[in-house]
Length: 235
Image (cartoon, rainbow, N blue to C red):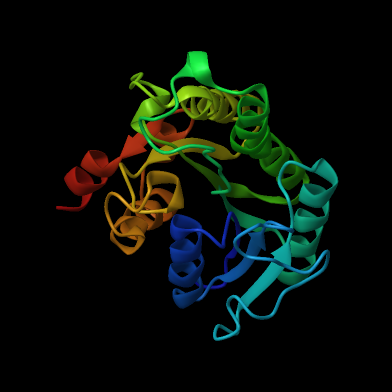
């Protein structure tokens, strides 16, 4: 990914942050979006933030809320100004307003359901839609997801619904635009969303690097690739 332009949303989180550092380390210009007004990581109200990835010269950190289409538009316009055509987009922003297994759908609050859907599903839509005018012809979009999106598991409520919708958004874009859009499932990764359970985010970076550069574009486009696919292809 040397000299490529990469956009990562949800960059303050475990997977997003790991991807920013990995792709920047490989020589890409990375525009890292962090959510404004986060309760656990306050950020400036607009513009850039120089603290999160201050140790990496080729990372431009921008405050943007993917729930806001105008923020998404400004994010992609900035990425195009900083690095030219965008080669890779990874919409990693996500929320889960409960603990895994403790949010049955019949007990879900309307506010939690709405915000999870707005962030996890609509946020993928705004991110990809606003990226399209700036995408390189051979660009790829990798939408992170999880098994709860395709195999219901008790207690995942609106979060599972929103991830299933995010995968549907990815398939829709894969059908409608010329660039490659696919879903990447890294399994359970230790982040705030999983309560710290699962693999270290650094351990799944290779899956995304492979999906971004070496995975067959036809198989990825509108499809779903996971750890088993990566290991089979690279063993």
